View 1 (cartoon, rainbow, N blue to C red):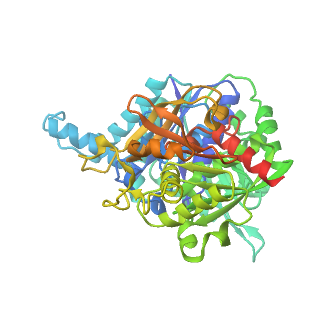
View 2: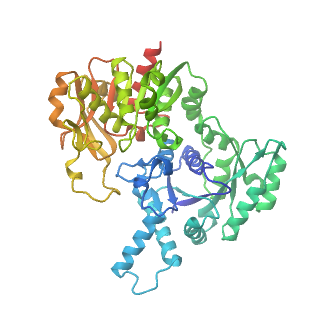
View 3: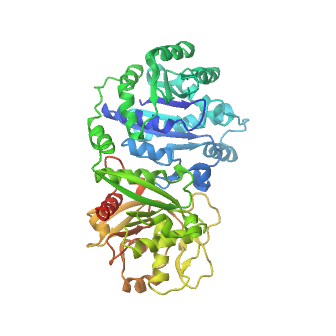
Amino acid sequence: MSKYIFVTGGVVSSLGKGITASSIGKLLESKGLTVTLIKCDPYINVDPGTMNPYQHGEVYVTDDGAETDLDLGHYERFTNAKMTKDNNITTGKIYYSVITKERKGDYLGKTVQIIPHITDEIKHHIKKVALNQKVDVVLVEIGGTVGDIESLPFLEAIRQLRLELGHDYAINIHVTLVPYIKSAGEIKTKPTQHSVAALRQIGIMPDIIVCRTEKALTKDAKEKIALFCNVDAGCVINAVDAKTIYEVPVSFKKEGLDSLLARLLNIKHPDGNLSDWERNVLKRIKSPSHTVEIAVVGKYIALQDAYKSIYEALIHGALANDTKLVLKRIDSEDIEKYGVEKYLKGVKGILVPGGFGNRGIEGKIAASKFARENNIPYLGICLGMQIAVIEFARNVCGFKNANSTEFNKDTKYPIVSLLEEQKKIQEKGATMRLGAYECRLKRGTKAYDAYRKEKISERHRHRYEFNNNYREAMQKKGMVFSGIYHKKDLVEIVELTMHPWFVACQFHPEFQSRPENPHPLFKNFIKAALSLSK
């Protein structure tokens, strides 16, 4: 039977519960254990697919087409776990399931209540993942902060699960903040004490307390937290601010967290070894031989998490080239206001990521044109491909004011148009082209040079597609259609012949990039940018 680790958070949000859970997963895998991770989100949306990036951050997409929380990206980057639609559980999904059952009469006339019906549904979803994926350990992260009314059903569900499973099969880890007050030169443990007290009030006793802190906790501070929070001093773990998230598993191992977990869960496995991780990831991050500046021209630049997987994949590509990445984040609306030269002159690579709506589109088109005309390596992703073909159509093929029907329904030259199967769809949630689709690559292209194989599979999230009516005209002017989804003859990758490295794809390669296995497109993009900087 799978064992469970429940991860909660207190004091403030954004403490890094997802990184904590992912790092623990990495530690357990280093011991030879198999793991999976679940994110429980307390919002009522069925999934984050219809949420504004400024509200939620990035929407992560799985192979099976689920739109999920961005923490599932961390789970896949740190571990070998493969995420599915079942690995993200929201309040909306739970209530939708319960109400559907009630409408069918499954409850046989009973009064449907939070307890037991909602909590039972949460437990059912959690146990289903363990049953289907057959792993040694399931890590369950509860979103939000202890004390929030929204997360109470999830907390009650894991309280019940802990009792049902028994101590050797389930433990609770509480991630909390221990602030450092600079004016006093002291760290303060009181917020942690209050957070744990709130957790205990609802019947959950933490076994381990992970303390996010600017300054490492002293022995006395650990003992004080242990005394007031009713845990052993050895169960109070330092989580000091790190220069890179990839240091966290190593930091936890130095704290003895892996051995502590094995003891509490009665797991008989050898000591884990993170030497490959330290050599292939941390050493390259800390001591790179080269430096390269890459500009990311986006619509949601103000929020760091809106392009989380993009930034991480760029770091992975830099790692593969023994290079330090210098990121220049540029709002495409600023390019529209002040001109492209001001922001892109001197950069060695330009990446234009995905997005929706016409705000900032002309700024992205200007960035694509600047990359094409100045021979700067360019990587376009999803919308980044669409604006690349629009720019090429306007300025190379002579299709004046060419556009996407997303931005101008009456455009004379609809270079990008709505997918045929999307035209009758009214509802927005989970109705895009989502998940993994096969793509065949053309030999002798930059795409083939990156992947080194003819058949690939990549994850999608979009409604609009390149209009094949313009393929022949654009080919004559030097655009290469190097990746095709043959089943429906959809263009997946385009590139330019008379350019050192200009590649744009309709899919999202960032979702499959890993620090120890960088995505080939990001790897070759950084390589091309690096060659320009020499």
